[in-house]
Length: 336
Image (cartoon, rainbow, N blue to C red):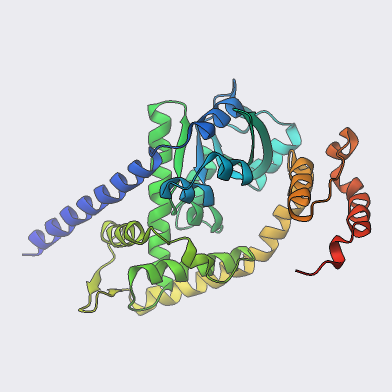
């Protein structure tokens, strides 16, 4: 009897893992507008990274069919470039070392594609870092929480590289689902587990987000998140009951929940120094950061800030002059 029960559980876990894999594969291989494909191909150029992942709010726009050329040119694309070795992506020695010690580095890229200016924030991770940061043991919540959301694989080196990336994204989904069970309510609708989890990850990462942001991440994708949550639980050995009102209740032992809460509290204590260290690092390694800030200033204030070659190389030294220009333009005294 026990052997049959174990065999049934194993079969259910295998089928659930297949559901997760199928869902993730469909998302990774989903279509994107040609403008994005052209942008990435130019950005990659002669380099040979493992792959390039497209994520963020514009992926949601693509999924909903709202990613017009105007939308893409008005916003900022978000990419993760996954490399085999730090030296596989062109940048200086200091940037490579900083990325090895405190990933990811972030760059700003701007290109003219089919008569339109497209802009992107590009983060760089090695494949080894991607594997490590999607594991449940990771002390950094940033990567697995990002990649539990829909993403597109818009450039890949070969079939083996695609499999490597697929495994990392599946692991990210499983890690997120496990944390959602351990930290979430004892019983709730599936989307409520995700909302609670994303609120907690924002708090740990010290990200300032508008009220309802975690809910917006699920909008239009409730079925997808519900499917991945329950399938990941079954695949990961988490028993759950479905209640008459449609809510679900994961059977997390009290001792396991207590351990998870202590671990999460530790992640919260690590979040502040980790993110402060990243901000300090970004001041010296954010390639193209000056151009990005100038564009943001012009977009939000209407003030044109000239960017000299010296200012682009030394944005910190030139920051006081930029602040003075904005003050003279009355930006800081405006009311909305």
